[in-house]
Image 1 (tube, rainbow, N blue to C red):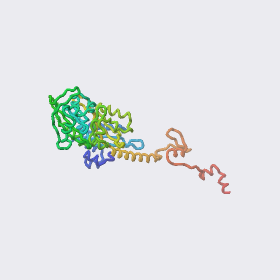
Image 2: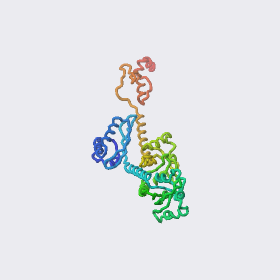
Image 3: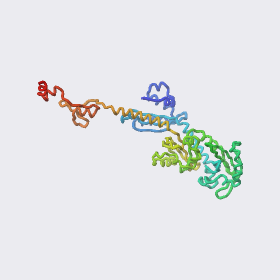
Image 4: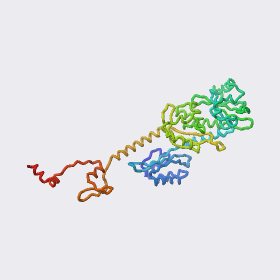
Length: 419
């Protein structure tokens, strides 16, 4: 029987008032099952948990209308016993779509045959270069981060290049397209067509370049434009790191949540954000499981001002068309408010348990001797009645002698008192 629920639960499952009013668990289940893609799996898990009342469970549910729910179930404890089960549901449809879109778009960027670069508009140093760029130039990403765009464009001086990009910085143009040559690590050169745009992140400007090798490679820059717009628009914190957990991208929501500027994080190890109160053995597991396919859970991170806060993090690995792991992506959200609600609920439960624990009462049938009035305890020992009652209740005894016993035990005492 359903003993409690909130309106969010009713709205998510669109349960009619008549079913909710009945509080009939079977009616509610029947209505819910009709909305699920896998009703048999849903029902199987419910039955498993009813058979194992002390078990906890977490899974995701796909609905026929395309929505995705998180389902979390845990036993409700009272005085050390399970007295029911709490079911929690959360609509994570938008978050899963954001995760899927971010991963897909980063895969497209890395796998693109175009050379794609992001570099600082002030220093001209590279922040990112995709696989196509690294392969064609013959540099690693770490080597490129030590170079500027001028190091691979021998036809430009700093003065001529800054004059070229001035219309972008002054917002006179949205995009520049020009032809030049690129110089590889082995000093060979090749002709390119450069599509250059400028964007700002937290008042810092970056250039976004899609470079086409005009010796034969065909590339498309629309992928990057879509990615840039999508990642900037979502409310979740999105971060992309190298395979060794160094940050190469964060979106605006990430910077707002953590209090950093993007350039303060780029190139830094994610340990900068981790709270020292996390289990030190736990953090390597996140990286290991992320590389193996993905990790999901909760941990504590730090804002720039040192404030600790809880997050829910979902990670996955980005692979190119060859199946090679090229980067790691994490999508997270601040769950401070949710944790406060959970802690308040736990506090109320503890108070109730403490209140019940302070109440002790005798009940049921007690085996008592008809002659001496001793009571037999659970271990088979016979105890004086006052001892048994004191051990099983809050009652206390004081000892005296009643008038009848006084006469029986001390027959002359009462007469002497009268004389």
